[in-house]
Length: 401
Image (cartoon, rainbow, N blue to C red; front, top):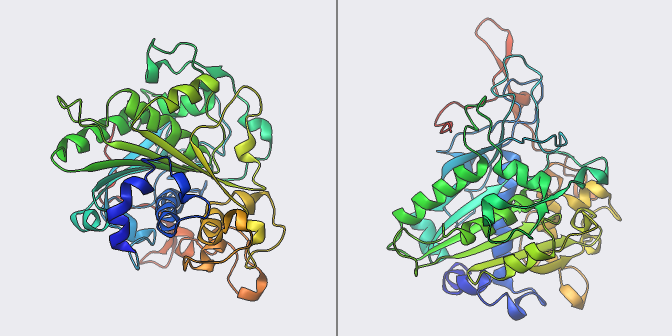
């Protein structure tokens, strides 16, 4: 399995737009999609959503042992090291599902949120993956949006991505604001998420310029929308090429899970026009989020359709939160049989993961509901017997922007 992925990685990353790999779903591609989905899931597992904490909206873990803390080391052959944490803000008002605000007056930041990370394959990871892979993972919404109109924003021109070249191209104002906004009041967003990620990609591409490189961008929900903007930005502005080596372009691939629409038909046309850019959207049948916004938008890339209703392991028919949940999506990828119909877990993915943050599994499997919680919710007993909320690692914490 591992060796075949190393040999086939260009095809798995969409060099040929996935051709006949999607139906029936190729076994290596199945594992490949799950791998990048797990990298996106890590952004949820590492995010502090406890509003009582002064660190609400920040990351829970440091960079050094990040993948160990989110459960992506044991049994996982793909080795990476986090090199950069990403922070975002927004110059326009967005729902709290996008940006979490702490209640504490001593909040770590009142303007910014931890929004993802950049990681690079280690030498061992490179051997397994067949090249030096740079991964950018974007965090999505932290709660189910209560109203579909939370997705409704104006269409705006993405001048910071395309400059004056494509003035007719339009994208979703909310996604674009989170990606490009800066705030001088915040030590974490003196530069935008866009500037942070592009500078880090430039540094890594230059560092490994003598090796074969891939750039893989991934995200779920809001994170998928940010990933689509980021992927096209990298290619449009040449960040997939080392300095002074304009002919040595790396393939940039976006794996987008439950992605809302990002831009208009001109954005789709621009996206499709870059020869080193690919995108694969994974879409669950009853998930409504990929249908929005409704008017004036177009999907980008290729689509992999799944239907988690066909799984014998899940409560049926489920509900909005389970249809949209990323772990549910990865369960669907592990077992989908495409147009042939049915469901069979051809990838041995632990079904317990489905219940990590939802009530999705049938009760007969005896897996607790929403089982991933911090030990004692971050409360730590002190020497005098009192309890204190200590839910943040300072070790190797952040690079301030």
